[in-house]
Image (cartoon, rainbow, N blue to C red; front, side, top):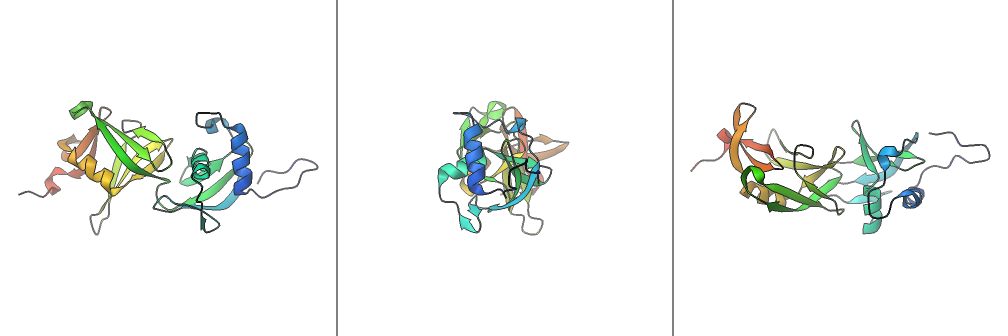
Length: 202
């Protein structure tokens, strides 16, 4: 934790202090410039993002959408850790899976020119492409897919079931790393979902 200046008390970070700090520093109409903020690590704070995208503070759901949105704009991934960053402090939080949920998808164009635009539960929009890829993990025992799309700066959104079904409906087969896959095109890139050989055949 950063040492306090002379005459200051070493105050443990809190959700309210973080919100106040970032509100004062954020630029209106855009994301805060967290890439410019390099405070010392201040330890962990009792904030958790559940797998369903719900934010909790000290075990209680955060029911203010504007506060969740504010916190989401100062979230950063450093290695395997998720942190909230302000100009004066950086605190670790717990993320059970992905920090965001992709709750809707819109498709424009067809084939290689197709663009898939995702909307997250905190209001971000991201178009899948080379810098914001779609990936699909599969449970080795059940084969259940867990699809994700990158939103920004290595932060991912878990694609909800209805949105995943929509992109599957838009899927096609293509070569990927020497193997035939079923997947989906977006932003000029092909994202594999399942090997074509594993597709059910009539």
